[in-house]
Image (cartoon, rainbow, N blue to C red):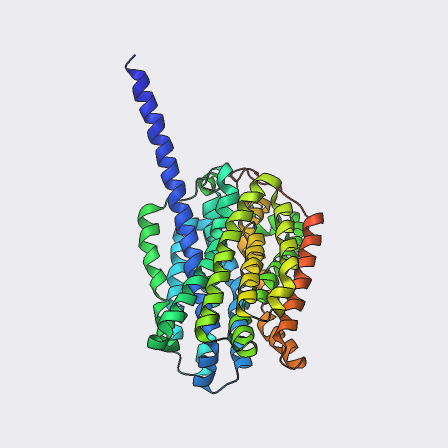
Length: 417
């Protein structure tokens, strides 16, 4: 009779411990991506001042964005392979340290060439975070959490954008562009939390005990999936960067002539929409499926496209931008779980991140491409924004209609090759 309460207490303690482990890993993965994005978006708000400092054109500075995005694929492969060999936790700590280091180093750049080199190294480090962090989270949390956690993880990206906007809005006049990059070293403190509060992925621990399989053999057996994934993530990256990279400084400031305060308020507003959209559509994907949730988000983006790109007042543009990013990052909110579920188990540390960042590599031409399109149309950034956003929304809808889905697949089961 006395054993039953003890058994109940033991089970309760076990459930509580599992919940704590899952909660902590979600928090770490979310903050890792939030602070990574925070560091990336500091450049978005400062590239005109960086250009002035080094005596180059604004279009030339967009090359720094291109290099950062392009080299993320290199980092995704390097750190993904390390995560598949040594574990998700230690590699996540490493990439957070490195991207914080290179962000701070950007503020010490002494020439345009040195700035480009440092931003390239930052891109490599940044490329490792998403794949490692998302695989650690998805392999640790309960299956029923996957949808909303996916949305929360991806909401880290607009959350970082939001923080960068706050820094720009309230700290730029005191810090200058170099000081803003120095603040970007702050994410390194997250390493201490991960080291003390995060455990290694249980799925990784189970998978690594099995027979070793060559990554190239796994990829050969999943070649069609890999190609589909790269095409899908190319469209996704054009979707996000095509609605964000030139929107604040070139559209809102240069074309619409909005004040610093108005620009800041609009960007803060649409990042709130992005955060809410990621969580909402991530949650929805757990109920109607990953592909259908993405389709719904893309349809919403098409409905608000005209008002977002061609609105005439700050209020109209602000509301449309809120809905646009609710839709864009709503679609993106499904990506972490969708890619991790599609991924072969043996290379989950590598596959999602590399596929994502290869798409980023292809889409890394977005900022200079949109700037060039606008220049060819008399400085009309509205046209460049609408052309890219509308095109990729339609492409994503088609890809989702004919693409695969693996909702609620086991994360620990080895892939048959």
